[in-house]
Image: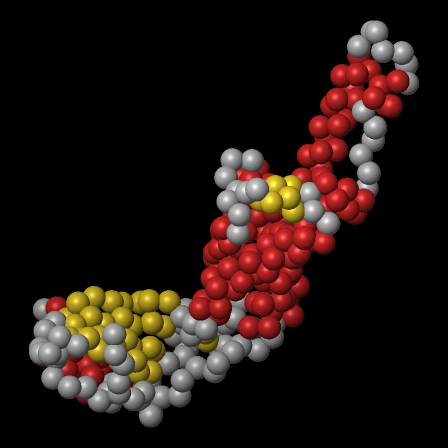
Length: 279
């Protein structure tokens, strides 16, 4: 895919980022943290069935990042520092939450064992608690798990290696979540009506129509040899410029993609041309 041409000079491109909205920031951070907690719990449950080394934290990050993208789109959050603050909060809760969820399951299991021991008539009163000692606190449990270690293939990971492995897992979750969120955060956003751009019209068009659309949008274009495709994107309120993506294939087989920002007059002319082509 090649891209050439210029944007319409008559129409300004939307700003790179949105202004901060304090109410949305106040709502976004707890919501992102809650999504991180849900991801942590789901990850702990899934880990019992499928947890390949290095791949599992990437899958957790991809899933968490996808959910966060959907949430920020739903909430129409476009302020990039706000977005990334929520991502960091969600990843932190997801990473720590996995350890805490595992610890919680251990506490519940030990409590059940202790209750079963107390119900056995042959065990004297008070001995059940000594047979199944109370679990340590969360941080102490982490230290004990690191000291005990676990096997990765044939190698026993314990001590500082265990802590390093947890750090690597956390980094992989963060990188995977960012890989999902960064492209979404770079999409056009209208700070006027505070909404993300969405596709309002798209489809396939003939070579002649593609040529006329390019002229209306002040694009530099060759001679399309075959039919092309177009996509019009706009903010919810229609207060910002309209984004036109136009692709076509030339005689030598090369495919071109051109992008232009249309003012109201250009947008109306483009829509009229498309409506005329459909008749």
